[in-house]
Amino acid sequence: MNVAVKTLLAGSIMTAMLASVPAVAEEVAAYRETQLGLYVNATEAYELMQENERAVLVDVRDPVEVKFTGFAEPTDIHVPWVLADRDAFSDKAKSWPMVKNTDFASQMRAELEALNVAEDDPVIVMCRSGSTRSAPAADAITEMGFSRVYSVIDGFEGSKLEEGRSKGVRAVNGWRNSGLPWSYEIAPDVAWRPTE
Image (cartoon, rainbow, N blue to C red; front, side, top):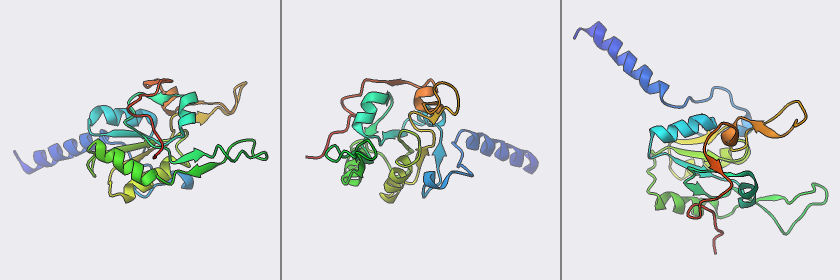
């Protein structure tokens, strides 16, 4: 085989390999940025899981949120990044404040180890909308030594409708709105339980 054919063949193989890997986002809002800069949308996350049996999906939402909005069926790990402080209702915010799960790192490490996740296996982190929880949780997992940690930029529920009667409802993209497998039933062996 001559050099030109070898070069063309190598270029074709590299192009095919790169096409099957989720792209690194060129521009992501600052609050969504991660240390590794690896981002996928929900559909790309699902495709990555289909292509790589070692990929794991991590849900970092509060358990109550999961109960009322649904759960991605192929979720491997559920460890909340933050939890609603049920003892501190805010009259001003008309809600419960969210507080960091102080056991996140130890709980996540235990779950990753239980599944024998290697440091170079894809770890896909998802929250509700792909912003204030999946990015810092992805960074925390990166700091544990994992090198392929992706943040799902449209999260489980996706983006809000910008007009119409349902304006403000999260009904655009995201896992739930992309036709991907989800349910209101939470897998008992994946469901998060507080550390005792």
